[in-house]
Image 1 (cartoon, rainbow over the protein chains, first blue to last red):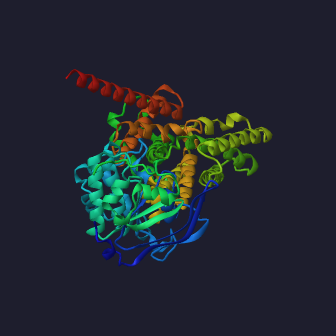
Image 2: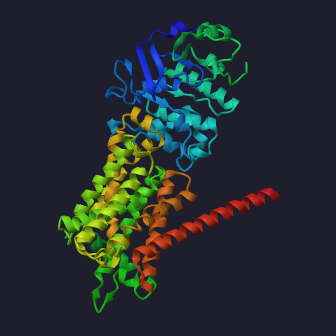
Image 3: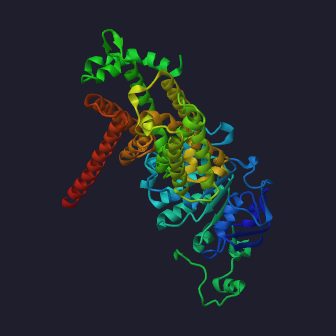
Length: 259
Length: 313
């Protein structure tokens, strides 16, 4: 297990206080508090519809909050000071519509757009480095739609890296990719955290994957039912008890049964 | 002397180089062939306007297709027909209705964008409403103002051969302006189309760029209406870009192929229409669609052949 507490010493990056979010009239997130410090790798797990993606969308400022506050580096979401500091790896970006023809390099270079450069593509060096970091140099001129699921996900991560963001949010990056790609993707994220000193918040319903890589786990189901070091994450039956349901009615989908 | 005329004077010596290889009885006049020592300026103007249009419309068309907005070209063209009627009858600008048309069409484009952006209407519904509403309004106004529809035929089907100096200047200026803005916002627009949330997180002002794009669409379409006709605008806006999408593998190559197909459509269309005495806009539309059909059939056959070969190996 990772010596998690040693790493959690950095500056506070994310501070969420009493956050509630309603979507189409239904409360999806209720009164949650969450702090994340620099260098942490936090995995958010929970069943389908438990508010995981909603939480990320609220953090990046794509949703209206009903109550509570979100501060990233002390600023509210979408404020000018945050531009280029947050990398967003969404489900949408890895499922590009088929008619969108764009090469890996073109996609990654979009990550370098910022208000500072008046939205011009300038920094080719950063693009090259980002592609190198995710190990996609061989296919950099290939149309993104021709890549495998794992490669596509890497391309989208490279786009976030090209913006040199310090705080990377990933929404279900492991969906639709095979086992080998999944493992190398997890290794990549682990490297980003340990060697590039990125802070990572990843949402997934793949419990095993999160257990393998995250320092800290959050179990979300409308509210936060567990938040602590990965090695203290409860067994499934204890979890069921936390959630107040019968342990025999299975709860979290565990997609990958390996290890 | 405006921008269009300057451009024409700059390009004429270049076009004249091609004169020996230009086929046909009428087509050489487009490239500067003279009649008893006098060049046929209106035909030269037509060529310049058509080339400028093909380049800018193709560029814009690529972004429209990426956003599944192929219909907006048609929609705004119909809106512009209503706008010409308003400018002509109500504002009394029967000589130069284009500036008013541009203003009215831009306002409608912004309203269509806002209806979609705010989620009041989804998909093409707002385009459909504006398209039919403004077309209807245009027809009603023409009838009330007792303007015969015949005077308006140019705006419906286009008339490339009677383009005046003033119109050429207006068209070239509008297209150049649109092209500069499109090139500037291109990366941000692409980022927005691929993933709007990522774009906003990066600090791209998605709403402002969406509005600018709407206005630019209106400008390009209004400048095309007089030449190619409201009913045929989509031929240059969407068809070359759609053909390019069939065969290209990156955004950049798609743009290049679009320009290639657009220019071929315009040149072949003008040649055929001049030699056969048909309307310019309609022939360009026919040629563009034919190129699409040939490319689609060729692509399908190549795909089927390689599959067949693969199956036998």
